[in-house]
Length: 348
Ligand code: SAH
Image 1 (cartoon, rainbow, N blue to C red):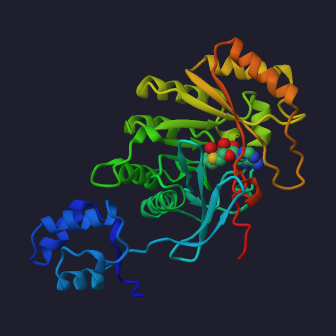
Image 2: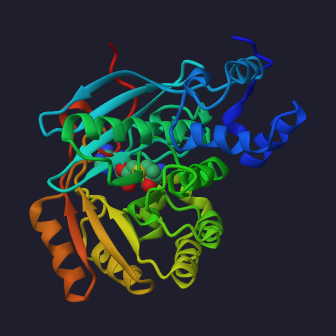
């Protein structure tokens, strides 16, 4: 591959129009190529059949596309499909298709590895290698949409940024990807079907609120007690819970969209009455609901799912206080595709 060729998917539609004018072509060619790239997800200039052969060759000489490819996929007994997605430079990320009766959800990655240090998450044990580009994020969505049509006879319906990485630490490319996924000149999906999940980076939450993207926000809270949260998610020492709360209040005031807290309950970590009380107090400060997620064992670490009694105590307390709570069962555990298990473990 010629390394001087530019990644064409880094160009805006306007950049493409300028390029075509610079080679003596009409500007509308820019729009045509943009649509091939983002609406139809073309990965080969030869597929752009409304361009002359000559133009296609010009493009091929000047640019590259660098699509991702599914290296291999695994199917779980419950229908979940995990893709190992290979990037042009050989790095691999994972993305997961999660089917239910009525929906297909794509769980997609935003970084290769992760720079955060959540002690219960398998992805955190990988170094952060690099950020994904917007195009690499969109490609994952297109792949899962195709699989949903092939295996479940329906298009992809929802997208969650809950794969590898911290999306708000790859802010620019993630926001760009969301625009490409939602705008009519891109994939044209509804932003209301997209949820971005963050470990909680207050400044970036506020910035995201200002983008007015109309997406949902989930926050991996896991404890509303500072000293506990700092232990299980050490990076959060830099982001006190009061700052996180302020940013979430800003999110709600700006977007009028409720926050979802993701919460795992572990034995001996956050299973006391004071943990429950702290969560209830925290939830009351900002319009929110709670998803209690099942803990997926990743190694012989200190973490163990709390007993059903403790889960029920959480649910009772939240419901008594008018806070909506759902319990999420894990999907795809048998193939290490569940939350917190994405770690490029599988080899062919
Ligand atoms: N960095 C973002 C995006 C990753 S989402 C975030 O933290 O929100 C992955 C979700 O799975 C997060 O809610 C995370 O807390 C949760 N998770 C991590 N490890 C897990 C495990 N072993 N079992 C269950 N959930 C886990």
